[in-house]
Image (cartoon, rainbow, N blue to C red; front, top):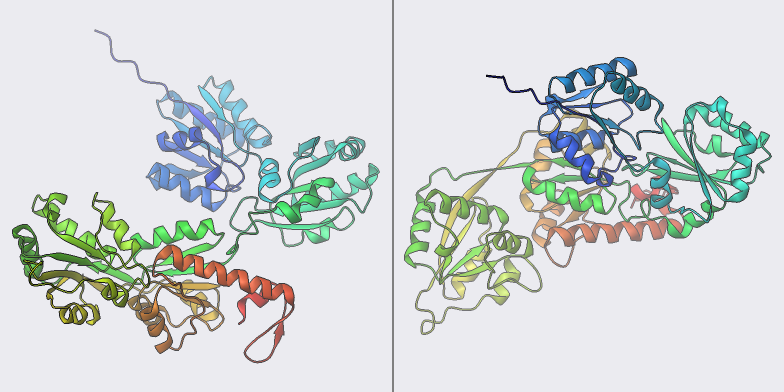
Length: 526
């Protein structure tokens, strides 16, 4: 009887692209998910490290490389022979990277099974993200050794079209000298891009004579675009031109709900920071909810009114406890206070009958809610599952329309723990460009656990009740959507930011103290 042969693992050298996790290929995603160990070096952006942790699901497997390329290649080869699958994450593409090539050669010499998964290079990404597309001829150079560059070769490449050079900032002075020595005019246009495709990508345009000074403040690897392609940037750049690009936006909400907002904000170019201010907990006593669920099954209610995603979740969790499903809503009409709540209902395969068209609030729902007709409505009772601190507006309005209301505490909202000291300091000192409030409780709780946002922080509120609470706390409300939904809230903030930028382009902005400010700082003043 022979023993089972141990499976042999693989070493995958994964090109991760320039920094935006959205540019990872499907093969790269699969390699990270399937890996028993994931290695990265210090050049990998933090956003890609966090993505690797999310994909792999085990932070302990994500390891920083602290050995030489030769030793690292041997280590990974040995692990593969023991049956482990290894993912080695490399910024950009693998083969232009000198250290990565050394690791690949070392793993190959150890006869490891390996794959190389290509990734988009910094040069390719900048061409698209910074709005400088390739012309008829484009030459791309990744500088590993500045001394090996031939000045005449570079000059000739620029004569024939645009040149893209990926280099470390420490090499820029030497690169300028090489360009000038090769006969390139000092007035030739140069664009320098740092943190390509990242949340803080920034491009400066200058010339061969001045690009070293223009790149002051940059760190690590940068991409230079030299020649006619730079002229296209003013019309074609989009990544840095998004309405909330570079804005640090504070999201005080429950952790689950904040994640959805963060995704939308990133699409607008913002840098979201989630600070949970509310924790959702079950009611202190389950008796009310137990009676409500029994009433739903027995046909006690004509309507159920959902005022939040949390109320939908609370009812659905009770359904699961009792072995019920969507059929328990049979014959029951469903009303939702807004689209986000309605979408939570739709996730369970149910379409709500009633959603306000205009103002998505208690008042907006009451405007369209039908009065009780004792002849047509054989059942005259409404179930209202909601938070323990909800206002009485909806209960009073439904009662005035002739309905009997079972106002049931479906969940409790409690104040979360204070955020870290650096976050608290940033909130109070103006370190955030904007804050998004989605309920009155998020306003009260944020102020309670972290203090009031600085007066130059833009305040956006989801609806009139939330705005009133913010005003009561002495906050200036800058943006508020017509419809109370998360997408509309973010769009309202984006429109406000666009107006600010337009005002900035027209001239200095006056602060409340009459001080005139210009440049990026002006965006922080109203």
